Image (tube, rainbow, N blue to C red; front, side, top):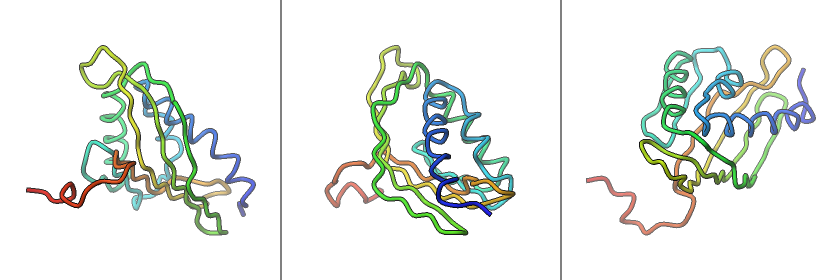
Length: 144
């Protein structure tokens, strides 16, 4: 049985996984994900990965886009922990060299993360991160 205190102890290592990925290392998130096949990842590079192998592939692809990153802040907007599920809604801001750029760029992500207890530990089962951290006009949601 895992409890809310166990979940609180997970938050700093979870934030450390962000620090790792913006420095090119996907292993922090990989270690936190459930090994079950119902895991999902929707990252800012598009699409939705489902299943452990596809999630790992997308994490590796995301990490390959970043280097020399530093976290500016992580703001927790909401947190809920029950005996069978927990979630975080956060805004992550950081600076990193992205793609071919040799200059660090500021970035911000609106993130929802869902966890469940497995084998006595909280495991990540879904992460959705997108750059829409500020209000936007309605036209920006239209694809065309």
